[in-house]
Each structure stands twice: as structure tokens, then as C-alpha cells.
Amino acid sequence: MKQLTVFILGLLFLPLGLLAQTTENQEVADIKVKTTAVCGMCKGRIESNLGTQKGVVSAKLDLPTNIISIQYKTTEVTKEVLLAFISNMGYAADDIPANQVSYDKLPKCCQINSGVKME
Ligand SMILES: [Cu+2]
Image (cartoon, rainbow, N blue to C red; front, side, top):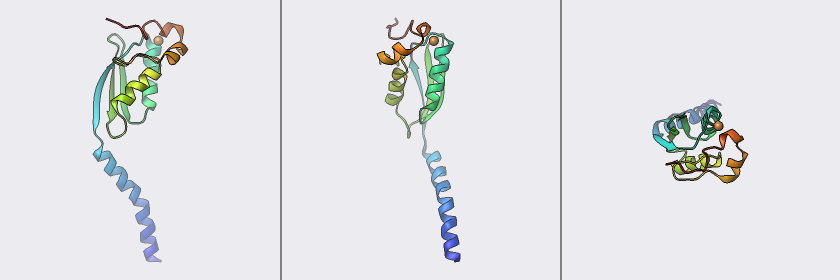
């Protein structure tokens, strides 16, 4: 019976140990992505959607420069996935154009810059 108790306790603490280990091994990368947001609605949409993406630690869009600063865990997500994610929201991400279908679904006021190449 005592062995069983030890075994069960071990099972309970094992996940905690694994969790602590993965947190230690996680490298956080910081990237800046040029996008095509127009207004505060775009900013809210991009930031909150990115926040739902696995591995994203923080996402902040600077509207005047249209640059999204993203911190993400390199063990959970890649830059390529993040760029595709932004494109699938209807916004360009660096040299990846906005996904046309998503772009067409954006409110009209948010479509001014998206998909248009800016100098
Ligand atoms: Cu907008």
C-alpha cells in the first residue's frame, strides 16, 4: 500500500517536473514584422489574434510604422508560421502578401493599405 501511495505521488509530481523543464528550455525570440494595418481596429485584431497563437508571448503593433513586435517561444512556433498566420488574418507580413480571402472579409475601412505594396 505504501508503494502504491509513493507511485501515485510520483505520478502527480511528474507533470510538474516536466513543465519546469520545458519552461527552462524555451528560448524566446524577438522579431519585427512589417504589416499593412490601417487603424486601431486592425491593431486590436492583429494583437489579439496573435495572442491566441500557440507560442506567442507578446505581440504589439506600432501603427505609425506598421511594425509588429512579436516575442515567441522558438520551441513552439516558427517565424514562418507567424508570418503565415498574419497573412491569413488579411494583412501582409514582410514580403508575404495578405491572404486575399481574409483580406476581403476585413471591414472596408481596414482594406485601404492591405495587399497594396507600400514604398
Ligand atoms: Cu483597421
